[in-house]
Length: 363
Ligand code: 5AD
Ligand code: SF4
Image (cartoon, rainbow, N blue to C red; front, side):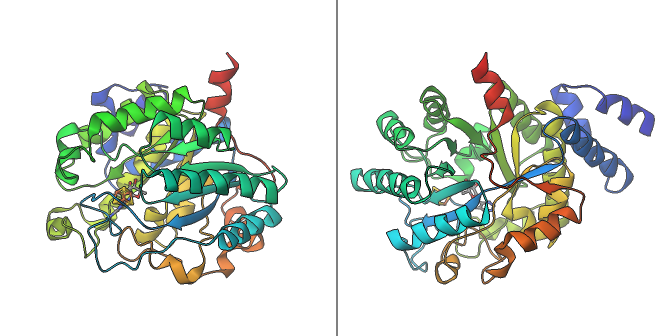
């Protein structure tokens, strides 16, 4: 039985049917073999090295209403905030001094001119304050080509925009069906980002109500067909103040969502050995060792949260988000201990560009 599995894993690309077979691995031995293969392929390509991105959740104001998300515009219970310039620059300075090499700036989605200018201004201010030594990833939703261009010119290098699910029907079950939540616009935005020269990242949630293993197989094939440079994906986790909360009884058990999250990382590493894959915070929410387990399945990026502690609890996309009050866990000394304990090295003072991106743009 395992011989057939090992044979299947020796392939460098898998069909939809093969991916479904692999995603339905039994917990225990079968799953362990697949996760081990993810680590093996990572070791042979980007290597057993981890890049750090300091995560700054710059604002939780959001004009959208995604049914799964705790900070959706319609949730009146959330206290809204936008970090001051000083707070952002302090967080960026911390990352710089600690040798993180890179930042992720994440916000809810807003399309106003003022918002666009604010992000542009902060990009310039961060580069100025950190001697142009940090690379910056933005995660600020769907924007116009012009906005993406201005942000790129102001010094953003990478962009994360999750497709959430590639099953169009499911997409419309987890979002309101209106112009503000349009599957095709999401796809077009990914194209725009690529045209503007970004390293493009996307991702999905794993274990959404109604989602099947075939959907997850399609998600993996989508990343490949889009020739994506980076992926951040993690288990779906319910949030009490969202329209999807009542569906929690229909979900795969948390342990299963977690295992499938790891399997997705390992299987993606097999299909796309050179891309950057993040060990998501959602994995850590379901298992205190989730981050390490993600790395050992093939992930090579972690994003320690640098948002000021007072605002962190206001950026709860889902219930029980971890590290709400942990500043100490940020220091590179602590991170180094955790990462080296699992046989990996942290790459300090390095941009950590997606090698897949460097390969495709060198051609
Ligand atoms: N569970 C897991 N991930 C979530 N996100 C938003 N809400 C949830 C949730 N309830 C993810 C989405 C989004 C990213 C910023 O956070 O994938 O793109
Ligand atoms: Fe807004 Fe993003 Fe949450 Fe959707 S997932 S409601 S766009 S913050």
